[in-house]
Amino acid sequence: MAALGVVTPTVTPKATEHMVEMIALISVLLEKGHAYCVEGDVYFAVNNFHQYGGLSGRNLEDMIAGARVDINDKKKNPLDFVLWKNSKEGEPFWESPWGKGRPGWHIECSAMSRKYLGETFDIHGGGEDLVFPHHENEIAQSQAATGKPLANYWMHNGFVKINSEKMSKSLGNIFPVREILKIYHPEVLRLFMLQSHYRSPVDYSESSLAETRSGLVRCYTTLQLLKETLSKPVTSAAAANEKNLAKQQEYISKLKDLKEKFDSSLDDDFNTAQALGCVFEAVRLMNNFMAIEKNMPAAIKTNIFDEAKKAFAHFGAILGVFQDDPDHFFNFDREIEVRKRGLNVGEIESLIRERQAARAAKDWTKADAIRQALADLHVVLKDAANTTSWIIE
Image (cartoon, rainbow, N blue to C red; front, side, top):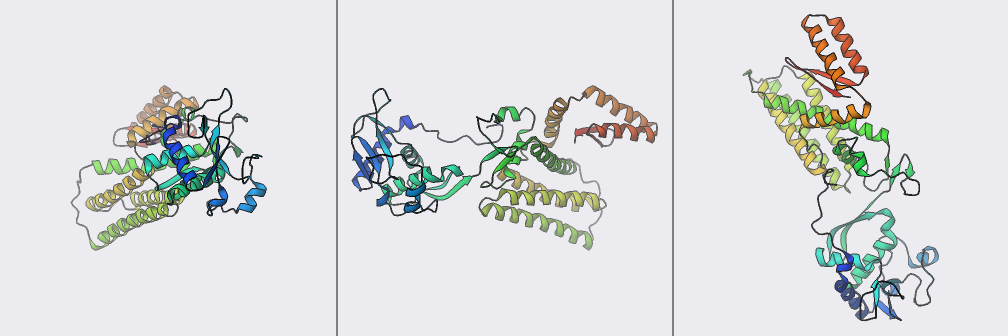
């Protein structure tokens, strides 16, 4: 997860180390009449919490008719859920005011979040399958105890599919992250996940990852050009005329607008897919600029490149991409792709040297033929002053 840029949690609490907090929370619910005890089992009384069903948009009658609930004569209502379960012979147990037992499935989350995040915290996440009953029950037991909202925002992510099929152990279609990172740069996987809105299902496939890699390569190609241009000293002192200054303002304004649209997209239910559209629009904008405005005064170019650098730094810092140095990214990516495709680096570089010799001898036919032969291997050449570098397309 560290390779993917996922920040380590500040706290990773264990339920078994928070029995005191769970028992205290259950005691509050009993005192307030939101729970009842029967033969050592403690249940939450759903009928006493009128907001029950608010998260999932269900009403009690529908849930009673269709919910998956255990048949249990101890319950006053089939939807009442267990807070503390009396342990049977041979089962693990902890001491409590209601006898030896263990906590229910939901109470640990409320007790631990309350301890470390407070009675109300900002964002609660989870898979869409947890909306009911788990999160619905978390809300009920927490808010019944405190009288305050548990979380300000609820974010439920869609399922991950593999080649359009649900990912599951039974189907054997699970791909560990470690295995994926052997064949792709970590930012490819991160960008792939960001391309879908978090509430939408994610369909993992080799073709979709390859397409994402191509998009990331386009971005890093632009970043590399920006880096190279900004590292060169400004050699031209050509004066900027009114037309050039207007062009400068136009490009800088467009970049600033894309930053604002990017932020607005993320403010709109964390719409990363829309935000990435702004990123790729910025890539297209800068590629067009570098292709069209070659004769613009160097000082004007530098000002525009500086603004572009700020924009991409902003995008990357928020999304957790573009964190690699472009040169290192391409070296890393090239090593992986060469190994994955079974290419021979020695042969590729030998052909590049032959092409350089042909160019020096002005044998353009041979030079073009070698370039095409390499292109057939998806090897793309980049000619600079006296050198030629290459990447895998």
